[in-house]
Length: 451
Image (cartoon, rainbow, N blue to C red):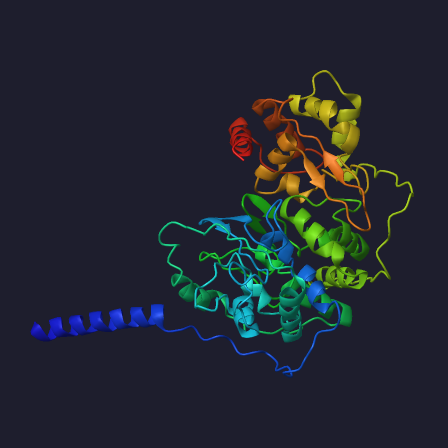
């Protein structure tokens, strides 16, 4: 018995020692994928371009705040995470960080003092960036971004998520890929697109599902679930691969136009994707947006037809599309407008058909399609209900300067009416999604009123 107790006591001591080592032994930073010369310098403009490609502004700039000075609230399943000040201010920003410190945060998610960053910072993806791009981004932030003194609100998650040393164990599960980019695409354009999608663009952070441990389930093109769709704060991030995905339904040119402008003949960017277009993708070259479109189009083996450029804004007239076979019955019903049509259909005619038409096809590059629209038919009903209640806005871009706005109907329609309208949209023109309840609408309305 005494021997058994000694063994138990010994194991307990070893467990305590292991835990203390786990907490206090410094984390080792990953070695560079390639070694750059000590006097290496980025090309003029390279760092700013990498900043846009990496979409730094969208997270690190608060509404109405100074550029990259942090303070933006980022929703997570564990609570609100406040983005950090990444200007070169020495007191409240990262002005005292060396390049090794900066690279440690970007690649390993660790600050200079060993604190683990919450993975709202997509270091899972940034670790795929090239050493040249990482160095260029650091140089740009330290030499061209104005220093801003701004002490942001401290992130305070509830137990046990406030114990950041636990992220060390999470990283063992999540960071299964070594730093650096490994191309698997067959053409130069698709390889460039793969790099932008996997690395700086961190598309998988939203468009890949999450594991039970909340890590990205698919980070590179070689992963089975890469870009098969995710859910972010109640919004669907649709699949970017698979037969029914937009990249497979649209042409490469239509997909590149959507990336660069947030709109095409089929859809318009809303929510977080609208911010990505506004702060990131519109600033990339046509070649890079086409490259990303080519990679997404070809990821499952489809033929890729590369356009030479992305069409600039002009004054051409584009005829609206007729109803497709799946939508003909709905279009006929709405056109006839019989007195006995459903309440949802009547509400659509009164409030929506002038812009989205009886066909549900909308107006090209202005009003998006509602037929076969992933936002309309997604598993999450919050986005559709939110847009009906609060409206939506597609920001103007260099190629499409006009800002597009849809009014909200919160003051015009009751919860029951919004539920009827949303349910109609999710079942019309061949759409096949579950109904929306008045309780669903009430929850979205209440959440909007609290902001």
